[in-house]
Image (cartoon, helix red, strand yellow):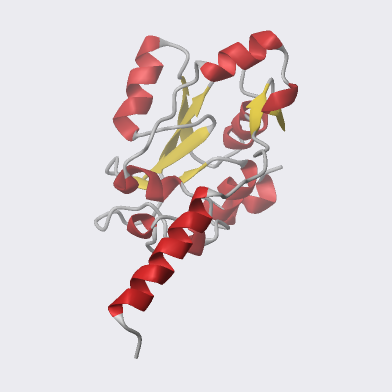
Length: 180
């Protein structure tokens, strides 16, 4: 068994070692004009823009239903580690009757999702989140990105969400043969 003096000596030695730690430069990548690039290689204007960006922390209850299906659950914060399931409320019957698609004019992923939705066997509404009314509607549903497709049942309850053509095929498997 070690004495208190030995333990305190070990602690002092570790504290001294920690004062003399020298790390290496961290390479930070961020999205710039549609692709990821090392921030240190950005031009002066884009670097200034990056320095003014604000980080947002989403509440775990509002983000868990938007996580990708293939995300490694072990890398998520513990308060978000819940089973991925459809976003259907417990009282929704799961039958899709209509959809709402949230899009932006400058979104490169929106056109294929809009085209895919136009071929669905039920009606839908396109909501432009670049407009004030569209942004307000997106906030009501907790939509954080475009494109987002929300599927509703006959009673107007949310059944599920999709963000890509692949996810739409998963949500609407009966229509897969008619979708591109």
